[in-house]
Length: 183
Image 1 (cartoon, rainbow, N blue to C red):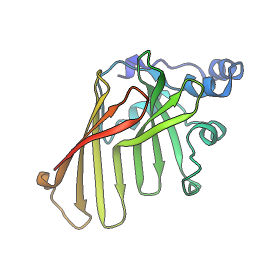
Image 2 (image 1 turned 180 degrees about the horizontal axis):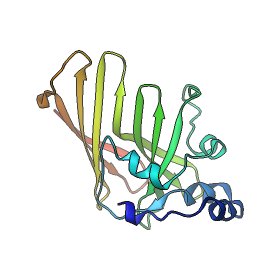
Image 3 (image 1 turned 90 degrees about the vertical axis):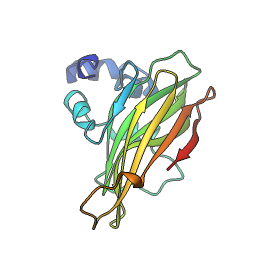
Image 4 (image 1 turned 120 degrees about the vertical axis):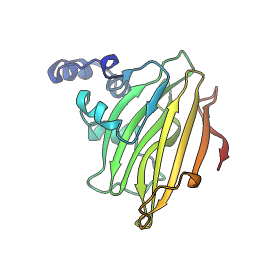
């Protein structure tokens, strides 16, 4: 996947971004990728090698939602990739790092930059009692298979019987639908 993501020098990228409308600036930070893509707990390291964190102004414009609690000061967003397709909407994945939570999030937008839907599909989180880990595969047909495990912070051994399978699909209108939840 790393060889598919082209690294542009910061100076050239800055010059390119300055001449584009804000949503196009935002999209330019996400490299195109071929599907299928597998997101593991450590996949963010691949993207850190080729991308810089999203600028706060673009984050505020295209990621922050009005219905969310304010982010803590150490929250960071890393652009990962944009999904292929000639759909009526744009799909992309970014990584969000915050206190006790590291998420890969798939988000969809209208072509003019209006958010449609988003969903955490991979990552690690903890509420201090339970650790949740998710890995995901994004398939060419628009389906997303997620395996999630939940484990007490006190458990020393992983119990695969506590895992669950989640299946999402990118709908034709850009919404991300949960198709089923199997334990």
